[in-house]
Length: 279
Image 1: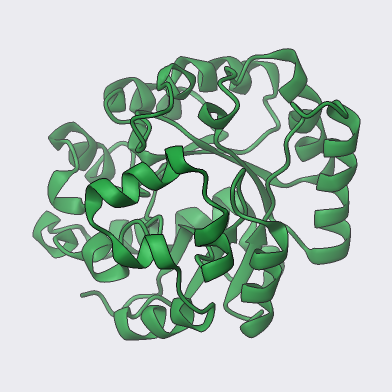
Image 2: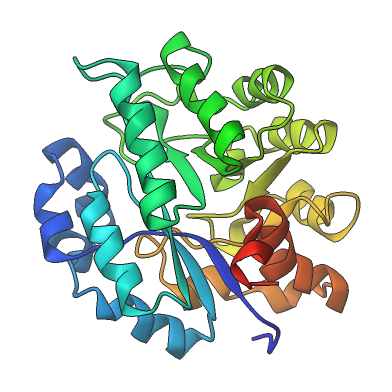
């Protein structure tokens, strides 16, 4: 395990309240994995305890379609010097787009959200649908990052087409000032995701929910070489625990500069964390 600073770009609070709020179609993944703690939840303090045990210094804690913003704020309040909030809003409700835009603005102005996270498979809506676009414009205006699920879905009960990387290509063209972090390495479309990240200065890839021993070889090559400024380590805790998400990185024989970029510096750049003193 490295002694260099580590930022996890994708964790979520998984308290008993969050676990109980999951719809049946989400619980199918936890049941398939036999993950009792996903089904029952954990106290918010467990996040920090497990970070300490694994040597993870800081993390971005995100809300989601089934993870309440209030649970994120409770977790961040435990250690605001180590945890920063990531908002999630939904423009697909009956109230329409603008309430979601206003909610995002409040999350940034009142609580310091550093990003907006979208998991579009929940709404079964491609990222290029018109209702998303005011949120992208708001991210540019607020100077925050868009973090989005890309690739196959975990639960078998949701469609995967919304995670195709070509949607990211379209967003990066339409919003060249928008910083975009694409999660889950885009698998099984990892090669396409790498090409799009290399094409656009404002696009990065994170490794959330993927164990290093299962990274595709082409992604490891990308990480080591021409994509060294484009890759961001993330766990998707508690889907993966921190030791599992870190195990095997030493086998890649990354140069110290590349390792530091992957575990720390690229997240600072993509989320502008230097403004929070996380340089």
